[in-house]
Amino acid sequence: MPFSFHPDERRGILHIRAFGKITDAELVDLLDRLSHEPSFVTGWPVLSDCSAVTAVLISSSLIESFAKAARRRQNLAAIIAPNPVVFGLSRMYQIFSDPADKRIHVFAKAQEARVWLSEDTYSKKSRLVYRPGLPSRCGASGMTAAQRFGEFRGELFETHAQCVQQFQDRVQRG
Image (cartoon, rainbow, N blue to C red; front, side, top):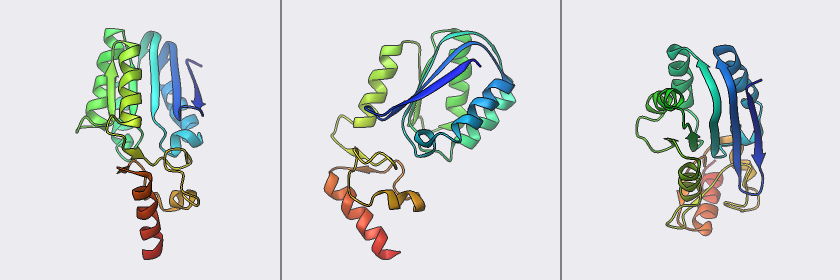
């Protein structure tokens, strides 16, 4: 299996590592496994490290179909791709899935990816991002109820109080 992943509970980031030769079938398997991973499903930011990829045998049509399906997700994603071929295919994925260029970025250097992801996740302007299942970002008690409605995924709030107030208002409106 040319992929491994683990959620970093302390930072609230899902780390994905790709290595060796990657084929269509293996990418389909990864996405199937991720669809059952709570940190991915609930919108945690993703750091994908493709530094150890040696060959890519993935069809452009698969990249396009997965990218279009990814438009429904709110996960921020930083992709580390120092190999020019992997970088190009990752950019193709980025362009198809994030035309506004806000949620997904591709980097040749790991440090740049980590900086972008941490700055965007925790935001330079001290805005809070509610991510379902990660109450440390917006720790209002009862926030997990928002998961059922999927209402706060990726919304930005200037303060914790605004996050709590918005949640309470939506619950009262039903």
